[in-house]
Length: 379
Image 1 (cartoon, rainbow, N blue to C red):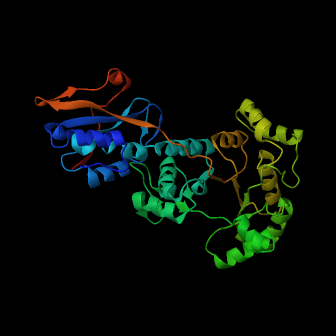
Image 2 (cartoon, one colour; image 1 turned 180 degrees about the vertical axis):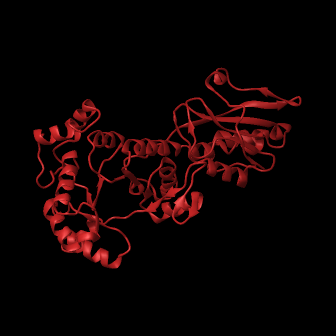
Image 3 (cartoon, rainbow, N blue to C red; image 1 turned 135 degrees about the vertical axis):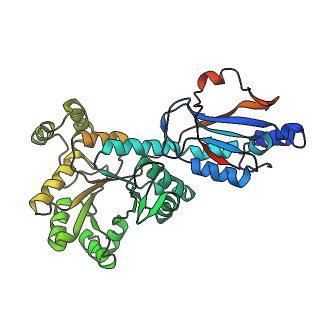
């Protein structure tokens, strides 16, 4: 092993301190854990790091991508010569930090129920993070992602062919590359959402046509024109109303009739009332707007047309819309990525022919290590 530009400098200096001494080869065991609950992501990257730079004689035991973990639970152990492991810690902890995103996506997917969730976070983060964010989305259960780079990374890591992926011991499922029509295309087609969609559909006839309906600020008129023009080809419409405008036909204040309709069909009236208070009416993509679009589509004999919602759909908003049983089919969201801090400490050293406990005071009281962690890698 050697020093690394990606390692915290105190690890590099530690390596230089032991280099050439018997302590460089002293076998140690690191334990990796978090103080949060979550879903693990990044383990495959850690294993690749160890393969490339860990040297011979390293054993990695632990959980796999997609497994859940609890606070203080040891998710990985790394055994090997101190000099070969000491400068890897910074990188492998950073790789595991994306578990926070996988955990958040898992919570979103659970909250969304039968509504599929699409990862659209790419534009909010540096481009080099796109593949890792897409991996976290897949581990969390997302239906797909928005960039070819992210899509390719997910299928390279988890792909089974035929557009399907499998993570760990889970069942195989589809993971798609999604892309609806952006406002930019509407702008260059004279500001017409329908003309833009027609051109898009002509060039991409095999891609389900999803019309973006809020560009002109006349959502109901756009939907009516689109149904008339595209008929059965209109796979879906996307609501992305900005936070400073009320959708066409919408209301700034609660409408009692719609509230009663919603509350009469929900399982948790208290949760639905709270959701309506925050997201029911007014500007942006609201619960009212989703019901209004569904009602209009049905009245135009377009019951087959799906509804895609986007704009600010974090966990709280998803839960609120589901509490009111808003009739949406897909959620596109970029408001979901977060990171989890992991810690790694030496907990044992090999001395006198046996493992002996060796770690800072109080650490062992924090940790719960299973004696049955499977071997993931042995170099």
